[in-house]
Amino acid sequence: MTTLTQSTTWKALQTHSSQLPHMRELFAQNPQRFEQMSVAACGLFLDYSKNRVNDETLKLLFSLAKEAKLSDKITAMFNGDVINNTEQRSVLHTALRSKATQTIIAEGANIVPEVQQTLAKMAKFVGSVQSGEWKGYTGKAITDIVSIGIGGSFLGPKIVSQALRPYWQEGLNCHFVANVDATSICEKLKNLNAETTLFVMSSKSFGTQETLTNTLSAKDWFLAQGASQQDVAKHFVAVTSNVTKATEFGMDASNIFPMWDWVGGRYSLWSAIGLPIALLIGMDNFNALLDGAHQMDEHFSDTPIEQNMPVIMAMLSVLYGNFHGAQAHVILTYDHYLRGLPAYFQQLDMESNGKSVTLDGTDVDYSTGPVIWGGEGTNGQHAYHQLLHQGTALVPADFIMPLQSHNPLGEHHDQLASNCFGQTQALMQGRTYDEALAELSNSSLDAAQIPLIAKHKVMSGNKPSNTLLMDKLTPTTLGALIALYEHKTFVQGAIWQINSFDQWGVELGKQLGNDVLERIGAKEEATQLDSSSNALINLYRQGQL
Ligand SMILES: O=P(O)(O)OC[C@H]1O[C@](O)(CO)[C@@H](O)[C@@H]1O
Image 1 (cartoon, helix red, strand yellow):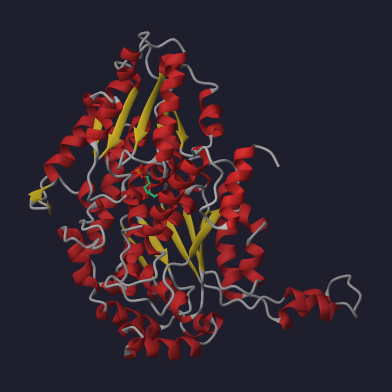
Image 2: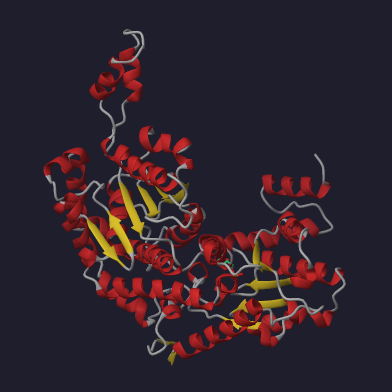
């Protein structure tokens, strides 16, 4: 048993959460519920009133946070303490969006100057590509960027670029290649012109198989289009913390943008890994993105936990995962530009908090990170929302919506908003048997059928949701939104006493993948592994069934 599950507060939460009335009743009891359970920060507004909480629940959740010494842990992260204990690293993505005047020490040195130098290098490069001053090997300006990277070196740039489409420079386009499946790169290259294409290779380690293979194929394609080896420097740049390996690979030293060990891959879009974003939206907008995240950093580090947006969201997730048996959490973005955000938050949360031992190696005896999934509204309403309303699994939901659309058109946004709010209402209140009967009593249904159909129309309700609003989706509000979820993830990890910043499970996949690759290329049949793995490798070697 861990001390966490033995604590008085934990046990009190177990008892208390099973006794709380239905949310319908909670709303009826307290007309001030919305005012009391909503908070604004950094251009974001969170309504968390549609959750299974009352004052007592919140008090207990905040006590749990205090007992976990959350404030000290937040300070330790911002101060650059080595909180990633299995990799002996500081966790300082917050330094990437700090102010130039700040001093942040990692491994004995102030890292802010090198962050600023890299931003300046990015600004110079972005300016020259956007202005057309940077020329390809035949003297033409760049029109297309191909970003090659995977995991954190892919999803952040892709999702943020997609979200900030209204801010793209005219005449520039970006294509993302992550998967080692040749189809991905072949399909992307089909319509591109080597003379006007710039490849940005992003790999923190400069050792990731998929990214190296895709970069080599991109280079082969580039040379096959008529370019020569000396033209490569005009068309290939790299972002990495392993400058030596990048130079050995053949990258021109002046085309390498550095990043650092103290930035985790899934927290790295704020570093030069964000170069494809900056190339599309320009450096002013990229700086606005950083500024939005910085505002959220300040809110997170300076606000009492009771009004602290990331802490509130994290503690609500702890409530459902540890005291209501929820194993999943859904992110529903009511904005087409934010359609990729669930996948981004999925990587952020699941790679961070998919852990089973505490920092000191003790097996946990409680649930840690849930399955994160989601999609864009209203599309999901015509698909998986059915399970949210009437399924047996409890899936807390986050609804995210800007109040203003970038594309105001007729009644579209009113309809979008009414669907968003209507869903949160339906999840919360549900529909009783009597209400279903009453609705059906005026229908043309056979009277004998009505009780059966009414039974099928019952929705228990009491399904929790948060609603997150912003005026408009801008670089600043997006920066704040992403930082909000980063900090939410951190807080959950702090409560569960796990390391949210390593990913040994993913590393095992890489290791075994390399081992299998050797066996595929070997002269002899595979015989050393389990019978399934041997047979699959041998079948693959045959090339047909
Ligand atoms: O940037 P790199 O070193 O190529 O790694 C890519 C990704 O691989 C991972 O280690 C696991 O997929 C991520 O954490 C990282 O973002």
